[in-house]
Amino acid sequence: MASETEQQGMGATDGNGKTFEHASRMVEEARAFGSSLSSQAQSFTESIDLRGRVQRGYVLGGGLFSPLTSRLLKIGVRLALVPVIKSQLGAMAGEVRTPGHPSA
Image 1 (tube, rainbow, N blue to C red):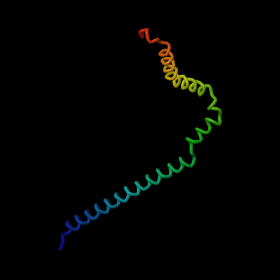
Image 2 (image 1 turned 60 degrees about the vertical axis):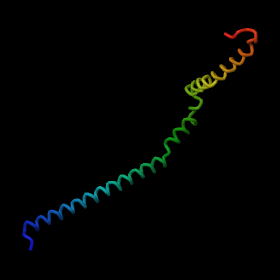
Image 3 (image 1 turned 180 degrees about the vertical axis):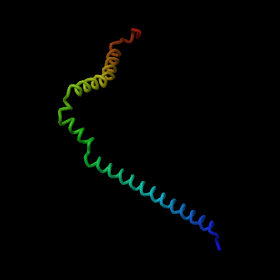
Image 4 (image 1 turned 90 degrees about the horizontal axis):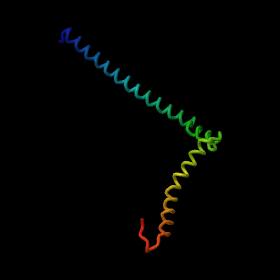
């Protein structure tokens, strides 16, 4: 027959086991809650489509024809045309050279 202290020790072990099970259950519930919250946030983001609304609003609100867009477009065209113009000038300079003259 077990003594009173052994029974208390067993009870403490059972209490710790129950505490561990309870803590494990709480962790699982917290993870499930976090996962649910994350999926709800993603669903909400998809439903309001904020990024798409901003892009459409920029175009519809005249953003496409704003002074800033005009400047950016001019800079982009200049940067794109520099290599083309440079190669054309090089080709023209090559045609001007005569075979008897040394190149510079």
